[in-house]
Structure formats: C-alpha cells, structure tokens
Image (cartoon, rainbow, N blue to C red; front, side, top):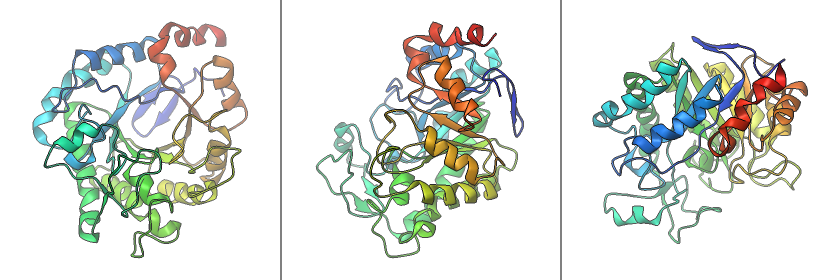
Length: 334
C-alpha cells in the first residue's frame, strides 16, 4: 500500500491516502462563519494535495461551542457564509468533509460564559478532567439527549447545502460524545450510562440518524480510542471497548473511522498506531481506518501503512506550519 495511491470512500474518489486532519483555528466570525483567515488555512492544506480534507469542528448547537470564534452549522442563516470555503476545495478538485461536534463541558474559552444564553452541559455533573473551567456542567436530561441526533442531522443538511462533500462526527478529544463514552465523565445510571453499550448509545444514535437521513452522504467518525495514551496505564475508556464501538459504527454504515485519543487528547507520544491497528483488525477491514497524530515525516506515514495500522494517514499541523515539506512527500515516494 502506497501513500499516494487512490481510495474510494462511498461516492468520493481520494487521489491519495493523505488526509488533511482538522485543526481548530479560531479564525471565524463571532457568528461562526468562515473568514479570509479560514480560507487561507484551507489553501495551505491544499498545497500538499491531500486526498481528503477534514475541516475543523463545527458546532451543531449554540451550547455545543467550546470557544467564541468557532465555526458553526447550528442554523440555516450560516449556510451561505460557508459556500466560499466549500468552493475553494471544489475548485481545487479535492474532496472536503466537515467535522460536526458538540463540545459539552470541553470549554476552551471562558468568554463563552459571558453569553447569558450559553449553558455548559455534559452527561453528568462532573468537572472535565482536562478542561475544568471552574464550573460544574449541567447534566443533560434524557429528553435533551434524544434531541441531540436531530441537531447533527440538521447540521449535516446545512453542510451538504453549503457544498461540502460529506461529514465526520466528532467522537473524541473529550467533547460531548467522548464524554458519554468515558466512564470518567459519564456516571449516568440510565440507558445512556453504565457499560460501553450504554455509554456509546448516543454516538451510535447520532451516526444512525445521519446515515438514515442521508444514505449517500460520505460519513466518517473520529473515534476516541481510549482515555490514556498507548503504553500508559489504562484508565477510563479502554481500546477494547472502542473496538466494540467501531464494529457497531461499521454496521451502521459509517464509511471510515479516524482514530485519535479521548480524554487524553491528541498529543500521543509516538502516535496512535497501536490503537488504529486494533480498531482496523476489529472492523475486519470492512471500512477504512485513519490514523492521525504525530505524523511529521513521509517515513512515519509509510511505516503506519506498511505495519497495517491504517488505510489513511492524517496530518494536521505540518500542513499549516510547513506545507512545502508535506508536498515533498510525493517526490519521496516516486
């Protein structure tokens, strides 16, 4: 398997297995609409000619923001403002999908609390282990939880209307869906808590709802494989549980799974190759698996592919900090 060989994902043809991974840029307007700064980041990502671009997380609900300047797909009046960004990738002939997210208690910008309409919600009234803003989140009621898949469906509709080619559901990095997955932040005793079947119910409901609403829309999931990094003492969500969730996601019609960390975050020493390999084995190669994190060289990208850890390699920061270096990888493979 080569890095620069094509791959089909539903109705998308990727010209390479290099994925421009999502990076939060805080570059939009306070209303959540892309600006020229957002487009400039997109141009940098295109310089290396990735096979697929995944745009940074877009909030599906006003309470789903983690910072004031976060891209939004929570209402119809933002759709028009997204068309220039989608058009940038269409003109370049590179497929682009948009990441959909609800941040839950993973608030990164305390200025959000200056908005009287904003509420910080979570599965349980437990401070976020990595981003404790000094406030206890409000636990969502069962009725509020049942509404959440509909917010993702409507955001996916807006993404499609804006010209994006598909969506990726954000289920990692300790945001709301990842908070439900983790027993460290999910202390519920109802059908959305308990064992991994209950803790994954919301994520699976979201994916099922989006797939049901849009049978032909390319649909990925960025899955937090564990709450600890590879090689560390396991805590909270374990990779064995994530493998079971991945099998369910494949059965529901997810088109690919991008592997990262959950409450531990994304800066894994040595990357997430072991987790991606376990999940790839768990899904039986039925759908492609992407490994993202710590890939800063062509040799590292090829190593992940050669070891059978993944089918796609996600690269984030390098594409923005040194796009020419990533662009040179094509010559390395020639």
